[in-house]
Amino acid sequence: MPSEILLKIFSYLDAVSLLGTGCVNRRFYHLANDNFIWVRLYSTAFSPKRSNWKVNSVEETAVSVSLLSVEDKEAGYWKKTYITKQITCVKAALAQVLKPVSPYTGLPVKIKEALRISGLGWAIILKEKNGREYIMPHVDLSLNDTSITVVWYGKNWPCLATLSTLNLCGMTPVFMDRYKASAKNGPRWHSLIAKYDLSQLTESTMIGCDRLIRIFSLNPGLVVGLWKKEEELAFVMANLHFHHLVERSTLGSVTVPYELPPHVPFLDDNPEYGLHGYQLHIDMHGGGVFFLCGTFRNLFTMKGCIEDGYVKLTVINFKNSREHLPLIGKVGLAWRTNIFDAFIESCSVMDVTLLDEHRKPFWCLSSAVHMRPAACPSDGPHFLGQTYYVDYKDVEGRVHAELVWIEETEEYFIVSLVLYLSVAKINHWFGTKY
Image (tube, rainbow, N blue to C red):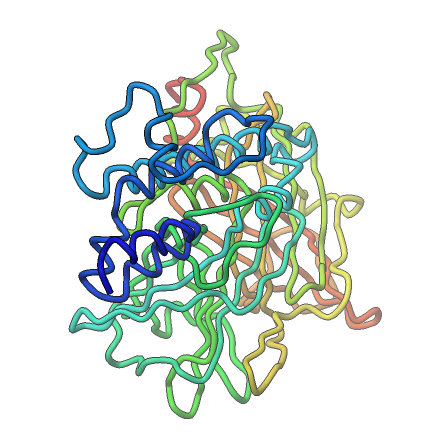
């Protein structure tokens, strides 16, 4: 078929269909890059709306674009310009939606609307040692109070022994209409969130098991389930905190994660600036069931509590029984595949949102944790029950909780909760020199 006729046919396609057509063969690729077609799409999408209903031809639209040359540009110029403009418009729309912030959590209040507008999804990219890649879109997700849990499972996992890394990426449609669902097979923009080394699936990262699987926790926020019998992948679960989630999932590239803008500290001459006025919101949940949901205000510490590069921030005092809190329900982490579903006891997901005195998110995390029996209880009141520890650590701080199992009521009580904040993070955030 002559190129002129093909170009005429292509001129009736929308942007998504035109990109798909360009993937058929080399000839279609070059024809689908035609500047006259793309400048018409650009003009229709981004020029000021007109009151008449007449649809201009390709040539008329190209002429109507003032001060812009179509023929002088290299092939594909207007396609690139159109895509760039689309991405810019999505970013601008998201920035507006994410502006309102909750005074209780310091997080955007319209996170669900932002996810809908962006058409955001998530994918994992499994890379083999020979360089081959497998891209797997998420199968299921659930929204929590301050985080989202994203799950992958299926029958066609590659062999674990051949894999080297797992990349977690946000996945957004390149072409998006906020009032329509995005095309299922349309082009997607990938934004790297985190990269994981699968050689770290060892005994040291295992947090629990049942009769079918063992689960492993890799920071930040990834849970990997392996079948006990075959030692192959059963499922992958990512726990993503809402703080900067949309930005991290949309504004990076497939190889480089989004970098937060530099933080400018708000200076204060208070001698203990940065050590008081904290507010903590903490959740513990597993599979849609919440065991704990608590907010603690007016938390503070002192210079004398600085030790080994950390500041100790006591949330629940071991010696004050009035502060002790129960965990509601049977604690465990639910998992599922396309065949089985089950429940691993003594594991859960912990979401931490710590705000500074200006109600800005200071430290946020969402990670799987497990309860391990304590060899010997801490000094203090003696409880009639087994004591358990829950610990988490990253570069910004540590969380240490102590729980006691009360046999009579068959429930866990948190009898101690302490945050250890990195002095380096405090100094960077507040401009102090502790």
